[in-house]
Length: 146
Image (tube, rainbow, N blue to C red):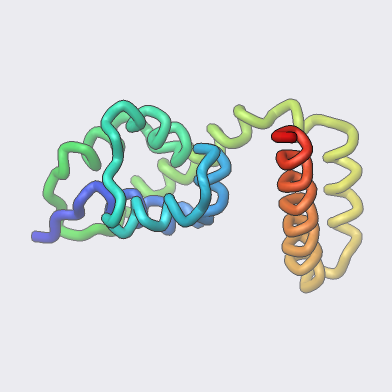
């Protein structure tokens, strides 16, 4: 039997849900390299931060308990039905947390503009726009710190 240690289970869950380390880092307000060190086992997690970690990764309570208790499993992979349920939970949590933004006129306009692009260009546009947004956030944080 394969037993995943907690940090490995976190990484496996995040990767399976197709969530970038940068996204988790933003939710925890830490640098992505810290998430990398946590997931590789180089950095331990303070027990007091476990609820924050669970929320940042959007892990359901029962799944998180299994990860913490290091329950044995035959495989680190989830069963298809379980994976589908977890993905639905993750998407619903993300949607609920950002509903106001998703319903905003500005976001709808952005979405409509994006859908007018040819499909191959959509991913490139999103990637470039995300980089620009990250630069604006960094500049904003620097101003806020001054």
